[in-house]
Image (cartoon, rainbow, N blue to C red):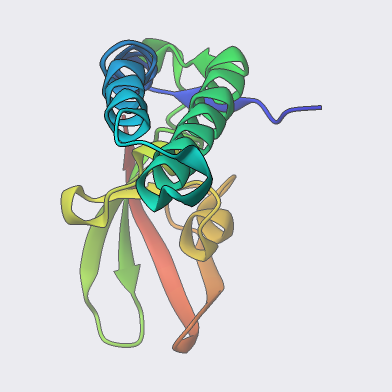
Length: 157
């Protein structure tokens, strides 16, 4: 059974675009590479042909994986998010109680995670430690650097 993954509209659109690109342009490029390698002669000793066929297999596996992800993807209606507790797609402002630093993260699906833009996977240790908590709650989260205590300052969408 595949795991249901929740997406923003933007994330779901990107996933659909990637599947479309891989099934159209991507397949055409792979087919062209195979045809060019085949034209170079004896296939039994043609490393370029073997590499192109292997690339085709990896390409098709990626398409299959993305289609499975897309089939189990669910769009979250951001207007109906409960802002009293941390959920997927919540934007959470937290304070590191050890050093006083504050940061904001949006909890998103793994494929949408991008730390540079403040989007972390709901499966990350920090997100797991925040899920279900409310403003004012304190939580100790195990991160690679050790345990850090955070306070939830604000939850928005």
